[in-house]
Length: 328
Image (tube, rainbow, N blue to C red; front, side, top):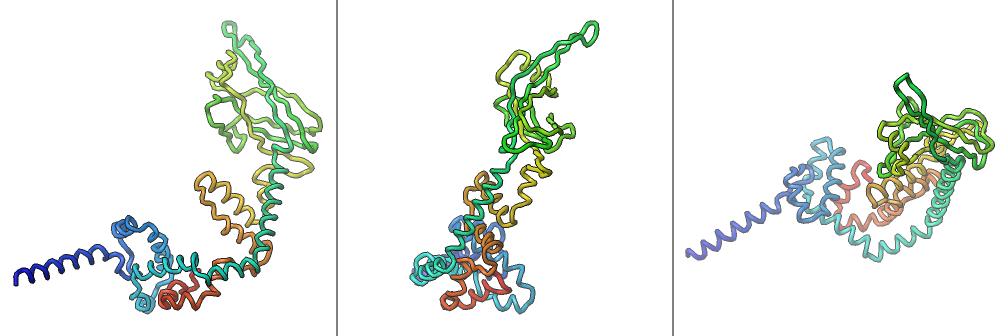
């Protein structure tokens, strides 16, 4: 009798322990998880983060008691299983393979057109960049010593710079420059209000021109240049070039780009530096929508529309939840 009782107690303890472990996943999706609960689940299954982000997004669409009652029976476990099931189906099911193929036949040419558009604007930026219009070359320093007072001899440093127009006659230009240690990362202020040394030339430049400028140098940099210390180098950034009344600089050129193309190029360059997972398809589809065909349907939307009955068959309530209030 005792052994039977012990077995029942043991089974009850196991059941309680199981419920304690699974409790977060058995909560309704209308109840947010605590950070501790979320951390507990994610430690076991990192893919749950994507599911939970869906719930967080859906919370913006659930306002009334009727909404809450409608979705109350959907647990996190049920939703997560649904998401994993459709992800698996989209990867492996013959139905989704067929839909992807049909989408490709119908829309693949749009991707090629968008790719050509992006290449054109990238080439445009490169071809019209300030660096493509003006060459700046440092040609050494000139040292001049002069008597500052009866007892003080000072040294004036002039930097010799060659400016060469490369393609067009240049109306005016602005070049930010500095001397710094070769191991330092160059930093250039965005304006000329005393934050950096600036070469300004406001006369027509048709032929190469050699000029002398007077850099504002920190004492240790000045001493290094006088001593011909090669660890101090001339760095520069061409800020603006004006030609035929047009301003050629990065910001001005980018304003000429279509919005979707600019988003694509900026995301691509930023994500390469910050996060290598650049979502090319997402940004490419924005280009297609704006510049190729406003009626374009993305591959994910095409599959979702054409596989609606399949999605509903898996779990109609969860399907309705995910598509509530136009959630894409």
